[in-house]
Amino acid sequence: MSISRRTFVQALGLTLLTPFTVQTLAGSTSSAYADFLLGASPQGLTVDNQGQVFDLSVASGDPSETGVILWTHINPASYVPGQSLFVQVASDDAFNQIVFSAEVLAENINAARDYTINLDIEGHLSAGNRYYYRFIYGDVISRTGRCFTLANGELDNIKMAVVTCQDYTTGFYNAYNHIANEDIQFVVHLGDFIYEYAKYEGFESQIVHPMSLPSGEKVAMDLADYRYIYQAYRKDPNLQRAMENHTFIITWDDHETADNAYWDYERDTLGVPHHPYTTDDRFGNNPDNLRQLRRDAQKAWIEYVPARVKVNESASHAFEYLSLYRSFKFGDLLELYMTDSRTYRTKEPCKDGSAWQNFWCTDYEKPSQTMLGHEQRDWLINGLTTSTAKWKVWGNQTLLAQLAGTVVGIELVYANYDAWDGYQWEREKIMSAVKDNNVANFVVLTGDLHTSITSYLKVDYGNINNWDYANLVGVELMTPAISSPNLQDTVNQNIDVGSVFKALLNGGVQVNNPHIKDFNSAIHGYALIEFNKNELFWTVYNIDKKSDNPDTAKKVYKKFHYEPVDMWLTEQS
Image 1 (cartoon, rainbow, N blue to C red):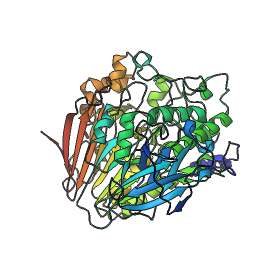
Image 2: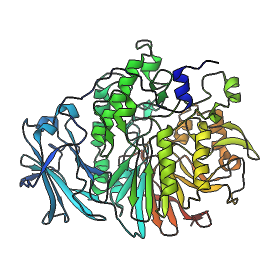
Image 3: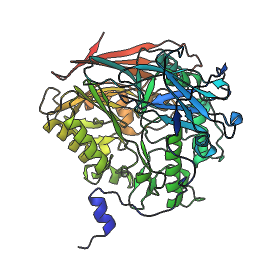
Image 4: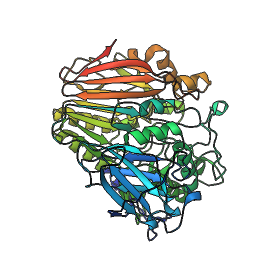
């Protein structure tokens, strides 16, 4: 039997790099991170509290032991050609003890980067410290931000917020005002920082922040649209306060590009089953349009998210242009692995046939189904199995645990093939590696489903015994959405969520999936996670997103305690 090169490469799970054309900024003055000269420290006169110059305020991200990424944006109306930007970092909020000062060269501020500045000051700070920072442009000073570096050596405790899914069109960011006030250092964002929609589909009657994209379309079609959306989101004062006060660690999910995004290996282009480039006859499902859409989404993310990632401006292929999976070590206590489950994933299985064919489909079991791609998967497994940190934590996007209709553990039908149930061979490979290498204190943090879930993780979900330690791997903790419509919202809008989800929502989740300890898709908010040497605490907050009231009540939905020695997850009163 003959086999083509394309089929052979796909079978091995390797990346096939077919040459194609995308618009690139190679050769321009643009780069991912701004150049700077040390030592400059001018004095500004006016603090820009109203955001006239620094219209999207300031932010920090991706901490290391000796640095952090600092971010800001210059209002194009206040842009002065040839004028430098200055930055100051101090150990006190009065800036009496400046530890870093620099001039960001004027050529780094330009339309090619949409007037955003990402500044990597790796190597200039000390481990385990809090710092204050500000930018100066002309005689105007930005609002002050607060950032943190990672600890080294022994660490007894760390507490951080975990967030996901913040559609701006259908809700208010009240949760972020509460996050801004939390006594924490870091915020882990698990994706869907933006949504590509001008209005969230199906919720048009509940839009509180309508958008008119430059393209005039209902979803983002190009770089201008993505930039417009990021700017709209980043103008929110609650989000600004949270990003001013804490250092963010961010990955992306599908909506930073388009709903249910994947990589179409057969055509070597982006796959977006619901986007007009795929569905609208005007565009003819042209692979070049889809490749450019991925590039535009990547570029906008790089511009508007403070993150230390690998960027190759001269690359033509999406896989080579941006690599954003990375890890963070919090002293000896915790190592966090942030993955990218959209760039390299194969198509969601069991969707192309009739309802009857899809019911009998078992493509989710095939080794060719990958969420992470072989290189990232090996990186994750190697990191988890060799880490010397007390806690090994995976920042994951879609539900890892099984969610299915079952009979005594036998799976009959799965609720969501866009989650890990559609990629079961790879899931079992990762879980088996963790178990076989005796990786203790394994925790997965998850977003995407707009639901609060606590669950045990297993190698084999057919084994319904939650006390079989030979099968248990760790726990998965899913934070509710900041503002995106949850499953209950969707049902209330008379939108079909599918027969399986509908059945599970009617009290059948734990009966069918005994590894799931708690499931609630009727709240919005965020979670706090606190790691100690021998235990962790997970607190889920329910915060109203329907009223424009940043001081709305912060209600505790539930608190959980986890002891990894006995792998025991309990709800606290």
